Length: 300
Ligand code: FE
Ligand code: FE
Ligand code: ZN
Image (tube, rainbow, N blue to C red; front, side, top):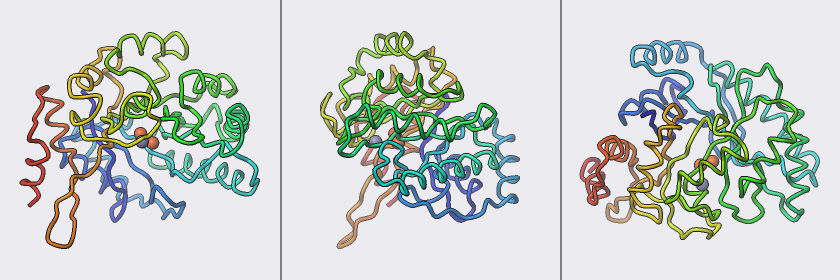
């Protein structure tokens, strides 16, 4: 199984990301090339990159298993403020170049929010922007993430994802499934085989290059988007296990974006990553109902 989590990208850039992933027992990871909420980006350090490549080779981690996530503030769906839309386009282009420098082959993108515009207009804006951004010979492919349908999010159903892909002239575009978002958007993850068949008919399974593996705090069709730790939410452990071990998706990296576990220490609240434990649990295939306690004990 190719599995990891989202990790930091700070002091040692991708080398630090890799070390964090290895500490979780992961063979895949996802990074933001800077803070997810802003567009400040530091220069790529080639020494860190070369050292990371060496360690990845030693650990048999392929660059196909390293995913980038574009910052949230990029919004291609609304061009009412033309400056902001143009900025999103040029920033995403630069982000693709940064990925190419790092050797990263996939960048996950939230399609965008139409904010006040009808969904069809939002989707038309996304298509227009992507046609400026995507080139056939880009070495990094944009993956459209399936969204929960919170507010005016585009990409809330497979039909919307399909119409974006159909509108983009290049075939150099793929999809990232998010299990929490799919549940919240109204897809029944307990019937994953049926879901995949539907996906295959509409879009094609070969377009899936990443899966965000998250449980959900909310019921199906709630359009909320609040992630829960594996086995502690609406999807439950068996449903998630069935997804991560799907034979048709065995070469696709699975990335956890579950919430950090908090520990109250007097006045202050400390938070710790659950990933080492969740990865272990998914590899073993048995649910640990004491997971959160084990995490707290480990980091205490
Ligand atoms: Fe995302
Ligand atoms: Fe996600
Ligand atoms: Zn989410």
